[in-house]
Image (cartoon, rainbow, N blue to C red; front, side):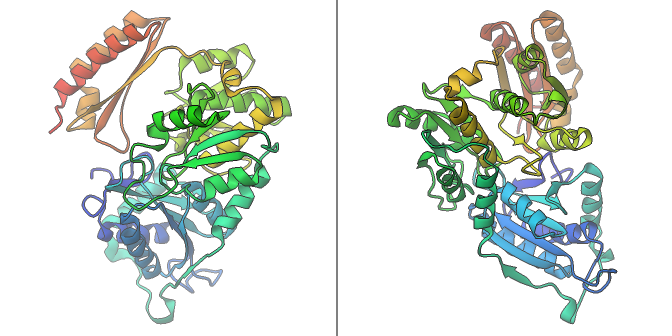
Length: 455
């Protein structure tokens, strides 16, 4: 698998790359690294480390959950199983329970055969690189772990009302009642299938839930935030005011307006940032976004006097910038949006609630609110490769990028980056026209394929 941790935890083909044996070792290593007490009775507090464990509904989650619980309890941890819940719910419950760590089993927007392990530190925060490196080193050297025995072995129990705690938290955070808003919610047959529609309904919206019947095999299958045609068609069929689409673990939210036009994460961030500025809660009039955000977002924020702080790709880097600057909102074009006043990580349902609240409070349509951002045509090509480093750093590829940047100077840009979770190199081009962006992206993608052909 190369480096164990990608941009969003450990991810791979379940029962192959990501085996139960590996899951057990990762969980045990995380318990040792993230807790002051390596086993019950060894710390000044005299208590065992506590871990919250949740999962999305994909079939392999049951197998990996058992392995993770075994790994945690073998390290002396007390395990609180919360069952099928979104990733941000596990982060929230980790903080609420004052646990030493949280573990979420999900491959997010990836297809069903994949799964992943996301680890949260105390307080529900994502891990910095140096802590991931420590866990990875501990996975490679399990002989060094203390092995509790007898009464010091960890125990596990189920938290039956975790979903209720999470939904109440979401609804309490909603700044305006949603009465009068009709919304289609695509749950991606994932972790939001129950708590998502419930939260929107309790906040007052008229909710039409689709793809809310997970069977363990259909998560993200032609639905959710990666297949927006489904929610678009449902919005038009039901005459809804807008539609929301989540991914498998519900840390993303994308939208479509009443006419079926896509409203992406950049536009949602702009809408919410303006709402916060009007409410006086936008710290230092600053929005945090990644290098993948459209140039149109930057220009729109400049025009309304909002500063944009830019980070590397990955919501973990957005989180780091938010925490370092004490800022109020940040996110990604893909729909990972973080509001630290309410969540420690990206929360798609929270984002959807606040977006609906802005629509309800202003009486304006989503299309009208989203028009603040005039997006530059953007083309993204995902190129399968044998080796991500070679595909993104070969001399021929770098030369093609340099030529493109010279061509687009002042009118667009090129971003080339290896995926953190898949064997892909992502080629993103913004230009004055779609045709030019496609032409440039196609040329660079061909150079990437030539440099590192996929097997």
